[in-house]
Image 1 (cartoon, one colour):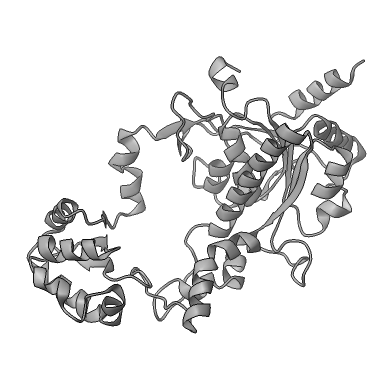
Image 2 (cartoon, one colour):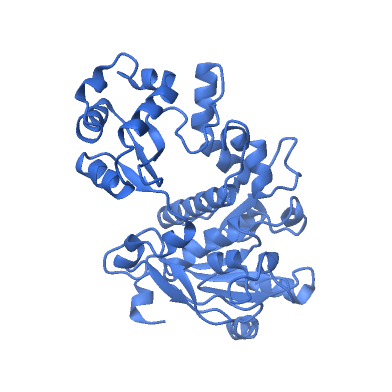
Length: 388
């Protein structure tokens, strides 16, 4: 490991992760990005079933490549005594242990967070589950979309006529981020107390946090947020508008200063800002359809490029409606050098730098491992460590 890697914030931290799918692998990958050594425990043979989600990226799963760079893969059958002994030896020298086995499986194996911290008092251990411990759903299997359903996300997402799921694995991503948050807090606490921490994060609890605003709105208003497709549910104007060349431009108004600027500098009608139908945001929401028709009639002679330039000049937040292909080529990505190549068993692939930028530090962007690629080396290391 070179000097730059040793300087990363989590250098020297060893993470053992008995992981599968997205939530736990994403959390451990974030730790690996910043220097932690992450040892991924996989089933011998096919390994993490996420490897088989698709084969579109050089014959590999795009989701697996996303969540598993910079890791070492150790193939173990933890129900076999010899492999279980190897896992115990790893845990004795680990700082962090993550697991997202099926409900109840970790506890039956004595690998739940509470049991592990009792055996290894400095260990930080996290149980990742669908619905958390206790309650009628604690033993229920859970996947991302199913938890989106249970927490009401689909009921507020989509168009007026058709509810829709989040197009990406938002429950898994939220869970992975809260696991990361918990690990970092526990590492900080251990520096002060010398003691490890057992904690849990569930997909349901992660999405409960994300659904707090819609829940509070529903409780206060006595009715749920409406599904509004590409428009904002409670702010107007905020959403898509068709310019004169037929292309769609998004913009949003957050306060009365911006509303006045839009009317004056983009729509060319300062008096519109004081029209009783549109004076406040609640007024504009009540008359949103009329307001949107009026705006589109005013911009009918303006191309999308011209409209974007006018909005920018008026300090109105705006965006193009990009496709994923357009995002891949986005100038903001490439001008800031946010796109890098990462090695895989099937050759280099494109990846993106982590969202955190620390001046003077380059995150670890190591290769994605093959199943069991590091088994021999890690087991040899454990044997060396056990010698008197």
